Image (cartoon, rainbow, N blue to C red; front, side, top):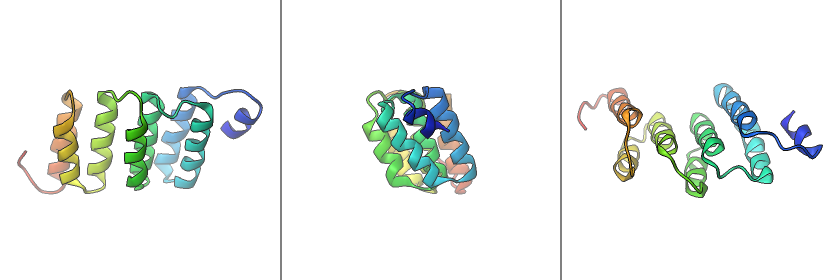
Length: 129
């Protein structure tokens, strides 16, 4: 549907892209998510934080960590949600040391940041920060 909309010359909104990415993440539809990523590039919105965070979450849930990092690194603006999405995605894939390293590099941490790290440690059976 988004592809047809784009072909007709209309640009899907950021919320349409993120909703579709969320659906892909929930069903593990990596190939469809990649196609959506391509459409975001064509629409020129892949670098904004709203769509970027959706891409990070989708790639993380589909276990495509190379693209998680690529999307994060190409985002023009990385807000706290972007950092938290990256930490959550990395830790969901059992890469606790990498998640901790990212956490330590965060410019600002919030409750979600701390919760993501505490959850990551709890899931791996490590109880210290």
